[in-house]
Amino acid sequence: MRNSNLKISRYGAYNYHGISSIYIESFQISLGLNRSFNIVARNIKDFNTKSHHNYEINLSAEVFTSLIMVMDEAAESDPIYYEKLFEPVLKSINRLQAVASGIPIQSRNIQNIIKNSGNEQNDVIDRKKPKFYFSGLNKLKN
Image: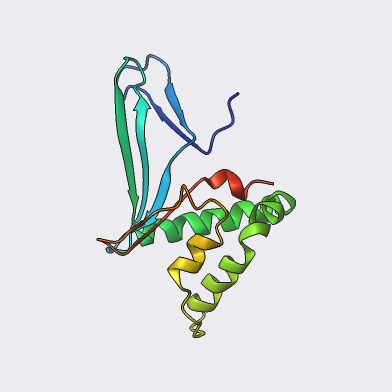
């Protein structure tokens, strides 16, 4: 089985002819002005043809909170795995916890986030729209 950061699968709703899947290893995640989380992958080969497509997935903040709740339940069932998974982002998790608890926190400078991300050539700031793009999720792996 192929290891990938993002897998998209599809199958017929009425006529099942098996599952077709694509594995997307290069994508960007951004936070939009409308508080949505956007995942964008470009130039991805089609499931069945030789054509290529761009994919965009938009998750509302409410959907993201549902993902956190599901991850909370999963972490209870396999704490050792999730401890290692979250270790590199523990500081960010603590900041989220502080915000959710109503504790005031100091705002971070977006340039420092980019500078310290360790992959400056793949991290992009769109100056026209105040979004933060983060790509290269492999750097979060152990």
